[in-house]
Image (cartoon, rainbow, N blue to C red; front, side):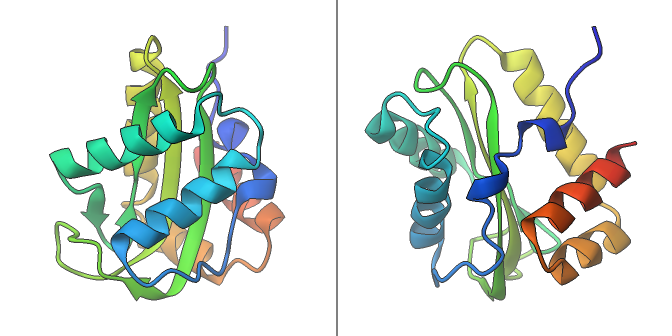
Length: 154
């Protein structure tokens, strides 16, 4: 069985290339509101609480303008990902203390720890490339975001 790629999990119509939030908690909520639109979240309050609890354990702002807010939760039956860009950047308590512009938010069923870790590691590898990050920041459409990610994964 061929494993799924990041792009396969992204919910295209939840992507936001112009996030309006200006702080960490509001951007998490804004991304989450978009993710809820896909209709795959069974318990909306639990899922949001799981993301916020995970963030309290330690920042998911990993540096280089990137944050990966995520959680394992009983609220989904399959891994789902949304993507967002803040043009101005958001103070996010990032490891390098820089503002964050790019967000990958995902929820994963509690029983899929291996897939969760695989996707987390894969995103972490991709974003090490400055060229990849710059491409995401200059993308003009949701389709372009998914295309950039898909091309980088191949």
